[in-house]
Image 1 (cartoon, rainbow, N blue to C red):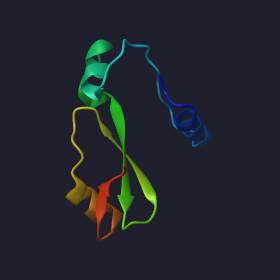
Image 2: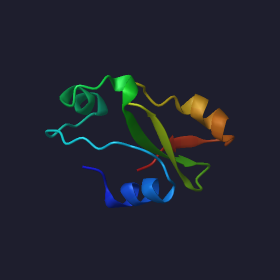
Image 3: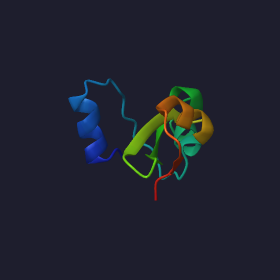
Image 4: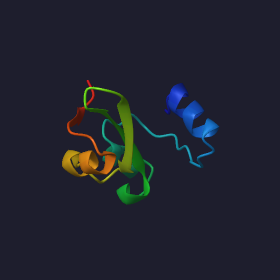
Length: 84
């Protein structure tokens, strides 16, 4: 199930997406497998904190892992960590 806040954000931003009902799953790869979609065609969101400042929502393929060093360079911050 998609969170209401995420759905509102995507809708307000004009981002196209598809929703698929699936059984309970704990990882994005499990969700992809449950709906018979390759992991590279499904996205997951990862929330990180940049320089102890704002939260950043990173979106990547379900089969990828978050490369915090690469993301830090892309964002242009000094420190980047997963949000708690």
